[in-house]
Image (cartoon, rainbow, N blue to C red):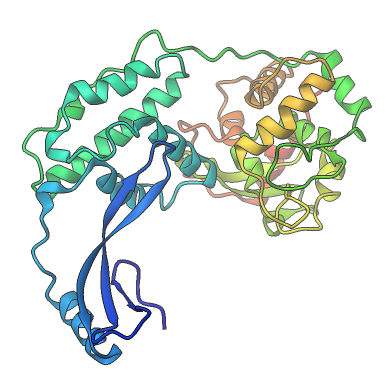
Length: 360
């Protein structure tokens, strides 16, 4: 039987040894230059039999030795913070924190007691050319790590409190899909793209245009779309029970516009609404870089996935459902929406009536 995570392990060493059974415990993680963690071990001891090794390991876990916490690193605390903080986040949100953490490799192996504000601020400043969201994630990571260190009496001062996000960080521009561009997407609904080169998975003649139209007619976030499981889709009621995790309001009932019901129905054969040929979900970076960007280039458009959401909100506003209305906030999952009301047959009909007013 496999030991629980963090319990320790036993291995039998090769050769003719007097004590061939080694007991090891995870001592931490060494972050390499590419951001990948390399596990470090502490050897508890060597034993003549597996039984003796099991007893020693069990005794250790009953009464753990006093660890030398003064040498615990920023990276080791990040692992603890990440496991606790991201457990309820979506896959795309977890990936965004992992990507942000890779910007911290220069100080990941520093003992937490030696990490000062200047080192963390340098990480923020060195990435000022990226979007404000990256700086926000970096600051969230540092805040979380230092809060954890304070809770465990590893430090006396929380230097992360004094970090400043760079005001010159690149602002993300949004553009609205034009009516002619949306007509072009419908016209090219059966367009296939060869997407094998450069990806870890092999995709043959992928049809993608329908996923863009689904976003344009629903306002769904790309991260939410990529995580939809078909079991949560009710085609008869024309709704999706959306298990979003970005905000409390992100968990909501999403009405399906009548024009995209056939598009959704055509993708109901697998576990995920959008998946690889092997039935695996597609992560955001793969979708954007291997799918969406190539499609935009092929159709000579200049958009980002989130432009679909902005186009939807603008389109609904033009059709009489204002951006500030409660019903639109509930559809798109804005954090300030009234989410206390349960979804009854009546208000589901109201959602469907509202979304079907959209005409591009």
